[in-house]
Amino acid sequence: MMNQNCLLFGAMNLKRDEIEGREIIEIGACDINGSMRPLFESYNPKRYIGVDIARGPMVDIVCDVSDLVNRFGRQSFDVVISTELLEHVRDWRTAIHTMKGICKPGGILLLTTRSFGFCYHGFPYDFWRYEIEDMRYIFQDCRIEKLEKDPQKGVFIKVVKPRDFTEQDLSGYKLYSIISNRRILEVTDNNLRSWHFKMMVFKQKLNEFMHKQIDALFSVR
Image: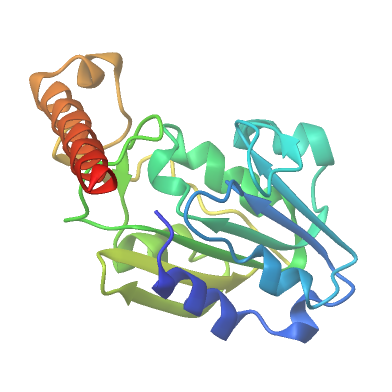
């Protein structure tokens, strides 16, 4: 979920000369509780496209991350932005592969996501948690310009895709999954049927219900 630290990281680490006159794509662009887009559009990009899996504020095109190469072609964007998306994508390797693929050589990728300790937040699902060492491994095929922790249990990264890019093989890399409470290669259907997962979903729904009841109580007063 977007927070002020995410917005600040974007503002501090993507400068006007990296945006102005450039082709920009934001993946997972729906504005639920904040967006970097107004700031970056003020830098006069050549084109700014917001994509997400459903219609909503700041979404120009509905498209799954796995279909972006087919939709736009390889090496189509100077800057690829993804804020608070990666933890929600079941096939994270394909998402990373796609982001690297649509980025031009010499282009920039800026991503934010959640780390261990952040609560389950399904939109509609929530699968993964990324640490500093995970991002360093995943993007060792790029030049890491900024990599830092979010105090609110997250991680931020800005990288530049080399002009002589050779993609890192991530097929054997395990990530921590909040679904299984351990590092795994992939989330299986059995994981989604587990008691651990069902309890997390129940707690989220209960929390949402309680917040609605409290809001309704105060609105009556």
